[in-house]
Length: 70
Image 1: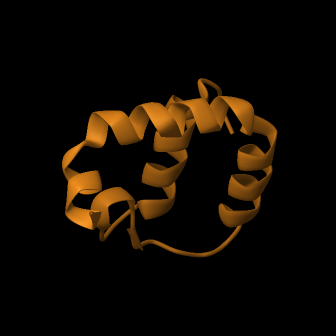
Image 2: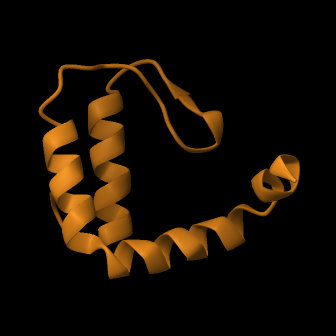
């Protein structure tokens, strides 16, 4: 089942978009806190490893998802 979820990214992304709209304020609060941490690397969605500038990459992705600046 885990493999099936990973293969259907478009379905997962639509679910994430719906959740993001419903919980926008909670997501913004959590990300604002997370972005105060000192990090440069991260493992993001679907196991993508970001070796450099991970904080900016995370911020950009969520700004795009939420449709506003953090």
